[in-house]
Length: 514
Image (tube, one colour):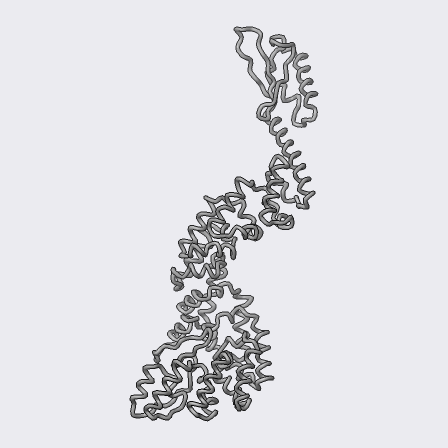
């Protein structure tokens, strides 16, 4: 083509699209431009239209026997850049609209937004109808990149299907807005199947996810699987994993190597067998979540500093696992001062009380005083009441009405001196109807006179043997941690009829009923 004509065509296109920085004359120097003299409808190329974001120059041949000319584009890059500029303009308009609503748009610069304000308005209104405020959206503005029809409605519909009430979907999204980006089939369904495979009840799935919605973002082959496998390896019953997850779903997000295993190894080093830990975790899975360095270790050291024997630590933990996660130093200091000031119990006596009933550290002082005042009002000296509490601290946890009934039976029916109650305060911990009355009537029928400990602090089998024997056995010192009898207290243990048991077996029994 004539160089002069080519230059004119190039300048024509340059002037036509002067604002397009990506366009240059150089891009056309090597392009094949048809000769205008051969065109049918004019003497110059005709700019026709934009197709798919790329500008085309169309020419028509006047000769019927000529082949159709080649249609050449100035540059593919030119069209793409032009589309990007339009998207940038749309994003600016949409961000301006969001700013008028109070939405902070800084995080929206790198995500794809809808092409029109109307679509964005639909998303904002949908989230507001769900219960989210502008402040909630500002906590995670990336949710505005989710399509109402492609993302929000399918995800929310599935969440409602698995048990999250419609009225709580807004709260769920506030707590875990990332769920709106999830694929129902690829990401959500596998997690629900995993939870069902752990034997979690279908009715509890919604409750579990409301407590710990981040579960929906975990990978099955990661933390969840390894934590379950480790718990089973130390003796946790696989069928108890589901109830554990229902009660404390956070265990599925805990790493074995940095959280669960170090805690287990530390508790084992204190003298708790893994079998006992497994039973404890089954009943109290929240113990797994206690921080070893920040809470567990300092609390164990605190117990020792208050005079608790190191050998008693495993028994204390087995009785009251919650003690590992309490703000223990403050509670121990407060209770020790209270027992010393109000009840005249010295620190050594307080340590013995904690060893026998560790729940005392959390017991309200007003609750403690009610049984104390009852006993003092019945003529028992304050120093004797203090001795009773050191010997059997479970007395302070007894309901007042039960104590009254047992005391009146002791005085009116049995006619025994108060001194026997001081020597055996465990009397109040036995059931009046199922143990005290029936056994006392058996003694009366045989004309046997014995101490309270002799006929109460033993199993049914041993009691029958004692009634049939021709001699009296030496009395035991009372129902301590591993002796006979049944202490019916909230959270207490049930002692079986077996007597010669190892320490591990004693611990096992204590933990089964935790």
